Amino acid sequence: MHHFQYKGNELYAEEVAVKDIVASVGSPVYIYSHATLERHYTAMDEAFASVPHTICYSMKANSNLAVLKTFFNQGGGVDIVSGGELFRALSAGVDPKKVVYSGVGKKDDEIEYALNTGILLFNVESEEELDRIDQVAGRLGKKAGIAIRVNPDVDPETHPYITTGLKKAKFGINIERSLEQYKRAAKMANLEIIGVDCHIGSQLTKVAPFIDTIKKLKRLIEGLKEAGITLQYFDLGGGLGITYSDEAPPLPAEYGTAIVAETKNMGLHLLFEPGRNLVGNAGIMVAKCLYTKKGDEKNFVIVDAAMNDLARPSLYGSYHGVQAVRKDQQETIVADIVGPICESGDFLAKDREMPAFKQDDLIAFMSAGAYGFTMSSNYNSRPRAAEVMVKGDSFFVVREREKVEDLVRGEKLPSFL
Ligand code: LLP
Figure: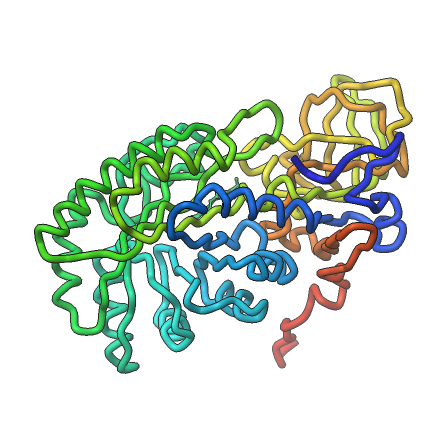
């Protein structure tokens, strides 16, 4: 459930008419519902209320400071994958002890930054990374809390680009090699082994792959115990899917019940890294129709947002619902919604039945809160969109629309020109 609903013919974000936001902020614009964000966090948190747990929001999904602060106010932490994300999280006031750091390519300066910040743990993704974190921690005279990201070789049955837990993936350390790497880590002076981690993929619509993963990791944890290595944290990663069109993923409560049942005897503090599930349906992107065009074989609706604003359709062929901000058009057409970018891959919807949009109509792209703005770029020298958060009957610009001056910030002409 989310708070983007019609009142009469007008689409509202909570108590604010979307058209009023566009009138003031312009388009394209991302709009987030604060009540929906809180509700999604609460649903996830309550699903694990019976066991010790921390929700480390995977901020790559949406790293706007206002979104982060919303979750931190509710007690959440973050899953980060770069020094830049750590900076953002600290800027929004995260408790460092609720930060987990994942990613296959951590750099020395990022490791140092994280150690100086005092994060909870590093999710270590390779044998060489273990050595590197040990060295950097030694240099700083610190102990680094670590978990090994174990690649369990489980198929999450999702899009290949967002499948991460199969053997052929670049992520984590293969489960067969994990025990030996834990034993090696146990001998390193500057590491403190505190957990085990995994993340098998994104947009999962079933619980079974999570449960298969837990079963495999339990065997590893037994092996660790025999080797005298005890853990405090079990990090199951993120990945719980959402409804974009007709998917029916388990609700957080069902996901929680199944996972609690499978993990409760482990006696470990659970960590979760949900991204999409918390923010995906808490955001929409709104664009304006610039032109319509009848091709010989196709109809096109040309809007002022493009693949640089919302990359998912171009990149993965993803579906985002298309809705009229004002629902007064009865007639429908089958069309592609495309942006101004000079690439045929620049589309937001393809061969879709939709209202017969006309010039200046506002169009909402639904479920755009996750991997929307964060994956946007300046391609074709397009300033990035504004971001707005709605709370009740008020709205707040939480990121200003970029200006053309922002496009050349940092660029310098060499003296020979
Ligand atoms: N933890 C780790 C280590 C991850 O790599 C990810 C996502 C998450 C947690 C959060 O996964 P979620 O709960 O959001 O499924 N750009 C793609 C999705 C890429 C996911 C990358 N990793 C998309 O737009 O669908």
